[in-house]
Image (tube, rainbow, N blue to C red; front, side, top):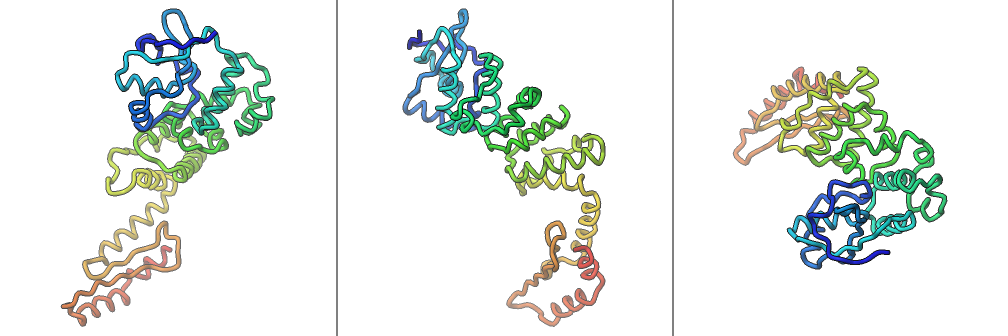
Length: 311
């Protein structure tokens, strides 16, 4: 029988996240909400010796602990049933608090803790989960997904990354997964760029037989004027397409010789396009004859044809 009581924070085992299926809270909005309004829905705890195990309300409890509260009003249960946990899942899912990793973990808990042989026969659960049948039926893939590094799992959850991409991540070596984990932990990576990074990783792995070359990427040295994920993408692109990198270096050398405070030439990104861009800056007191001479020298010289041949 469940009862509501005030539970000392120090008796709650925060290291036990077995039942946590909610997305990780990455900002302080929940803390501000708890500070302003308190905990509107009490967390559910399971008595375990002298400590309490968290069944539902992990993020709320972390927020209340962060605010320095000594105790929290909780629903304490003597036992937890599958029906109870399924109801927690459906409510959290309705509130959009669960991502793809949380859904996969929910399936794992139903079979691992509650020993359910066919955990998603219910049409309501099938519709709520949205997990492809090939993942549910694979006895080996779910443990692999849940064994991915923590920051990577949080990223997949927060960004609702496609299950196909998540499944492919399980083919990575531990070193490869840890690299991705480090990259998403070091800065903001947009989901479209994350997908491209994964695709290039697989290409490099297929070409080189390993991903050691990617370990040399130093994210701390990225240009702060560029977005972090753009710098990361460019570094991996350079490794994936070395011929492109050599071409870009040559184009950069030519543009360094041509460009000045009056005339600038640029090539299209990734050399994809049919034309160069030529920009001319003219001041009111400009010597137009001298500027015309410079433009004529550029148009009749060797540099523009070289750049045009690159695109």
